[in-house]
Length: 252
Image (cartoon, rainbow, N blue to C red; front, side):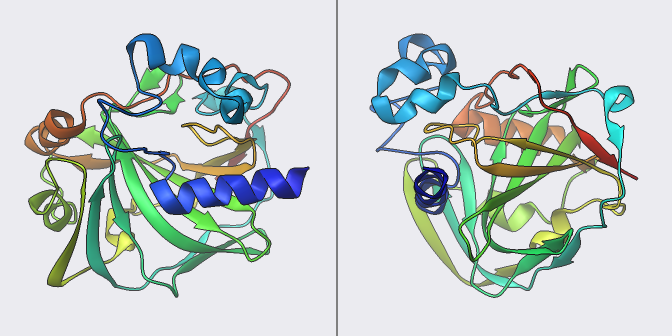
């Protein structure tokens, strides 16, 4: 059963960047508000039943309650990639060429894509950030790992510029010739401090098969950049979910 869940979750991530799109957001089978909003996800389709599970994401991370651990530092091995920007009706996503990966606690996960949520999906000590990026990875055995990076309003983020300058205004995938990007430019200087827990996709089908690594140090984006995203996508953060019987590990 777990293998089937992992396979389904992997397919959802690959196809829709953790945003299981089915056309534009006006005709999607789920949304972030109204009758097809987060509270209804688990009832919209049988395939979404996991959305009412006990290990859902995102969560509120309370730093003082996180358990100290001896986890290893995340080793980022991300190369430049051709710029392909996708608006899938739920988020803006940058797809990644093969060959980039992370290693953490002895496991290797290949980078598939990264996408954005505004405001942030995870909360830290009860507070949401202005935006959050999710870097989505998959291991050879199908297991998933997502690295979360918080954004706070501040100075302009130059690494975002090529993505934002080519952001499709409607549902579309745009290949941008002659431009390469590297996800490492969207990481904070300190990646050693992070929080780890077991959770789910934050969009339908909400499969509970994700290793979450949320970096503690935020990076900055300008007010204009945050607003430019919100004008195209609008609020796309799932409310925080109960931690239930899980625990959060802290690595610092």
